[in-house]
Length: 305
Image (cartoon, rainbow, N blue to C red; front, side):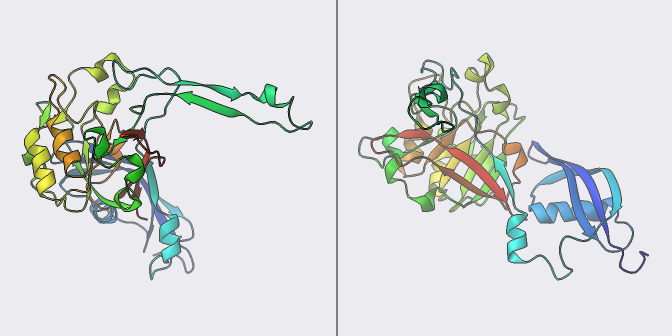
């Protein structure tokens, strides 16, 4: 047993493989423990419960060490404020850069100075300088959100999207990475409660971002999958692929079905392999621009502490 007043914590890495494909890794996690040690199976159960992971096929504990260190929370549990401060934020957006192509056939953004620091020195007092940037781009740039106006002339535009449809949505992640085909069917969502949720589809395609392969042979949802998500009451649908639709023809049934039902779409995401199947929240807010159907967002997931 530990000496009186001596507190111990376990530090470890972990790897998760999901039954429905995909995986999750964590490094440098720490956990307060009672006594001198904790076995790997108990530690794995803590990870599954704390991250609220579903459909776990394998969870391996790696590089486990026991360290003597004051506990970060009382035995009664963390306070609300402490739990909030321990929340993990996962960035799900690509960085917008000068000359970056998001969608083949659409122009890249031009990012430059409107007022450079050198120019500003001629305007302001000595020692005072500013930079004012300028960006010229199409609205389908980087990680962006589609509003109904993108597809329908009488649909809600970007400015009309309400914050309660964009901020802190309960999220479910469907891991479709490694599927044998490109088409993601309705059956992929059958075991998931999507009602009122942001449904985020992890295909792994974001690994091809900024390469020629990103534009060819991407994964997409089927028309039946879109109809299922509509009927089951999904609140928002996101994907880490080039397009949520098959672009081999001129039809866009997924955009038509979801946007027609008032369900926003977020495309060109990244980092979904880091988000647990359930238990996280999702936020994706664009500027309040009138007359736009799409616009870039800073999308992120929040995993509670």
